[in-house]
Image (cartoon, rainbow, N blue to C red; front, side, top):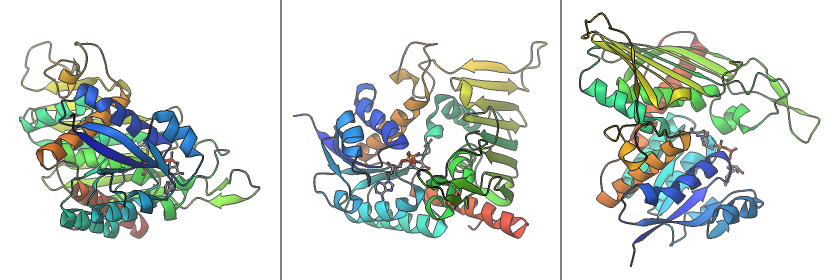
Length: 375
Ligand SMILES: NC(=O)c1ccc[n+]([C@@H]2O[C@H](COP(=O)([O-])OP(=O)(O)OC[C@H]3O[C@@H](n4cnc5c(N)ncnc54)[C@H](O)[C@@H]3O)[C@@H](O)[C@H]2O)c1
């Protein structure tokens, strides 16, 4: 009989849908020794039973994650809820012997991420933070090229992450505006991703100097005539010094009119450069200083060859893939790590390192000075 692995998902909206799609599809594209079963979905909102659980084929529905993590028929807990719930759900899941995949940012602060990491290690479970952009094939290819030495010594890592959904002053107050629910705003949401990519591509960050802004301090609470205070940043920028000597520059803002989900990376090294733009995610720009011909210049690599990372699972060259495929890649790799009892990255340790950097930026912005990231 075909082996099965049972999934319990918490959180039934944006990421709940993205992850469900991945659980549903992964066994069709990855060679796995077991088939994921959509066993149970959980959300505080009971309406999610019909709008999410039944609609997407989850076998059962819970409104309490405390009950879900105790269920004996669940092997993996997938956390797709607001940031203030990541630590308690993942710690309880680990204590109940479940493998955990948790959305980013890992948690509210480094005290929480440390306890997530320690509990997961103590329980001997597999743990992963869902930094899906590591698994964009073009970014995975950039990593391979950097590891092969194609860029030489790295001088600069620049990352901008722009969205514009908060420029509208009528956009209502949501959990993402509340530092008590989100930890931080654009910073934990968007810089968390680019900090993960910085660590993935260039290495550890030693010190940071940040600046954060709230441009609209109150917003209307939906369904009421009251307003809610915006306590999480609308935008955070920072400079960084990498351990190996590179210089970093990061901007995350939800006030970049016209930019919907614009994530651009630039890595400049002694032998060449790489640039990437999520809006053209099947492409990677590469410049080699070793090409000394008159045609020297940036070349645009269409990252759809079967020799490129992950692409042997998909379509013939030139048949592009999309944002949702990154979740299939991360969930496929997570299942393989469970099957083969291997380490997966980014894991809760990476989530903790990421959070130490995010926390240092927030401290720096508050104190108006450079801050060293703790070891
Ligand atoms: N990897 C990515 O690219 C990416 C993109 C967006 C969001 N995220 C992350 O995913 C997480 C969820 O974000 P989202 O955009 O899906 O949020 P969302 O607001 O769309 O959905 C959150 C869901 O969680 C439910 N919920 C809240 N508290 C709960 C609890 N205690 N128990 C059970 N259900 C609860 C809500 O009812 C809601 O259905 C966040 O940590 C966010 O940072 C990651």
